[in-house]
Image 1 (cartoon, rainbow, N blue to C red):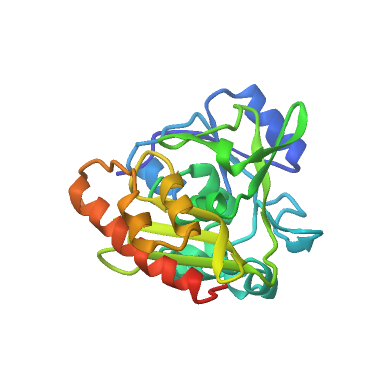
Image 2: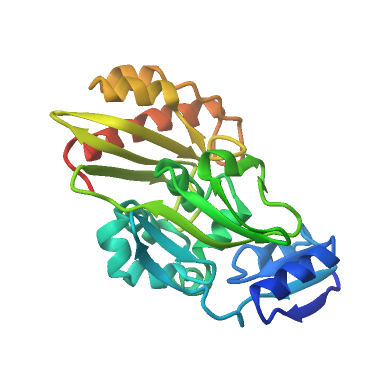
Length: 279
């Protein structure tokens, strides 16, 4: 299939992109386009206007800023894979990035675009949630910061207003006591996961504290398993598995019951990563 007709404009600046969004209620932003172009071609998305932000300068940086790692709206997955800043200060992202699609997709796709698209089976929204990260949104009223816990509202739905775009995402920089874990189960490498789990914690003596478990592929948004977090902080992996309060729906990949079983399998694997000092 081919996309429905649309107008195209190339934004010169963030302010220009925001003004175009505000003036056109049926507009979409184009950065990497790895999700958008597919939905256009299948006519799952039919915006009246496509706003290309690739010409905006200063949005492709990856940098340590104070206690946070900041990733600009035009930073590509492949760029992040090669980034020493990501490898050293955001190890959960480094674990997750190779699982995203295939090299051709990672060469063009952007981290912020994945977060904005908010596919519930995607890796990066879950990683942002697991790390307690945040989104920087720019709109007509200026910039605002949205916590990851408040950002994902429903299926492909976020807290962004109609005139806002993501200009950066930020995650806390890993410290000496940071522990991270990541695992997913997919039919083939590069496919969307049937079930996936991103996790972070802080080493606390021989145990863990501040455990955050973010599942993807099991609901309309990435989901934290808070009862399991508490059990895992207490050191009891099997209690954490038993406490999983996920209720996945059946889909074309697996039944809900199978997905919940796989969620427990992944929890055991990720718990081992956290307890063995994974960064």
